[in-house]
Structure formats: structure tokens, C-alpha cells
Amino acid sequence: QVQLVESGGGSVQADDSLRLSCVVSGWPFSAYTMAWFRQAPGKERQFVGGISFSGRDTDYADSVKGRFTISRDDAKNTVYLQMNSLRPEDTAVYYCAAVRGPYIYAVRSGYDYWGQGTQVTVSS
Image (cartoon, rainbow, N blue to C red; front, side):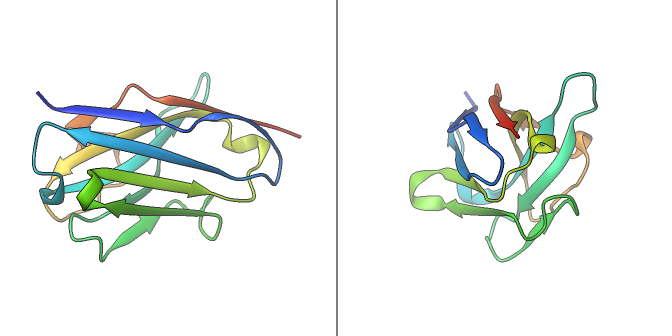
């Protein structure tokens, strides 16, 4: 059974940092491209960043470029999202997603598996 479990969310002040983790079980992690999405209240779920199954390629939404970094540790079946210089507009539920293969998709429909989400709240 495929399972993605996020952790690391919380409440922070503007300009603080957080690191989210997503632990994956149930299939060969190294065969899957991983991504992070976020959803604020009343808004669509949006792409934050992705990392290819090899780890060589990454992609980010313009709104987080230079502040967020996605990485993966295949030995731990874990993908990370390091978030620096957080802003109030980063407040959302953050979701981990996965799709088998090499491509990073910036749309929700590109991913087959999802975690339950972790809340990030940034206050000014």
C-alpha cells in the first residue's frame, strides 16, 4: 500500500525557516518524481516545487524561487522542502505528491499519489 506522510509544519514568524519532510512507503521511491503543492483557504492547490526521480532536476514556482529548496534522500525514502525567508502569503496546507517516471509536472493532475498535508502558518 502506497503511503506518503508529511511532517514539519507549524506556526512561525515572517522571515523564519521551516523544513518539511515526506516519508514514502509501499513502492521503490527512487523510481518516482516527487513534488510539493500547497493550498490556502479558498484557493486552488498550487505547485511549489518538484524533484525528478534521479534528483538531478528540480523546478520551482516563481513565488518561491530563491527561498525554497527541494531535495530527496533515497536511502531514507524521504523528500524535503526547505523553506527560508517565509512570508505570510506562504501560509497554506502543504502536500507531498508522487508520480512514477522522470518528469516534473507543475499541475495537480500530473501526480498519482498524495499525502494528507501539513499546515504551515506564517504571521507578520
